[in-house]
Length: 79
Image 1 (cartoon, one colour):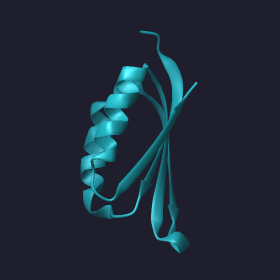
Image 2 (cartoon, rainbow, N blue to C red):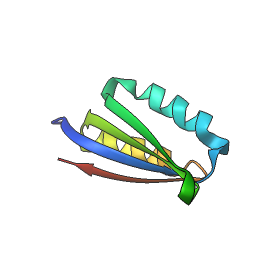
Image 3 (cartoon, one colour):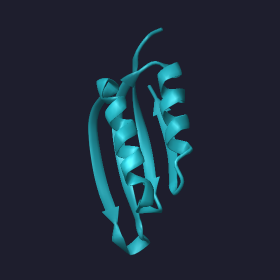
């Protein structure tokens, strides 16, 4: 399957499961090209933007696992 570039946006509403997220992202480090975090203090959320190179199966697996972590919302786009 062809690998393509994509962006995964993660909104963190509860910091209690940040360790789970970081462990998961570490497990997928081979497909992560870059990561940027931004605290939005006035909105009381944090935002992580991840640039990835992967196929659609990998994208679905990763975003599905992120989406199952309590207190997080995830959106993705693949080019």
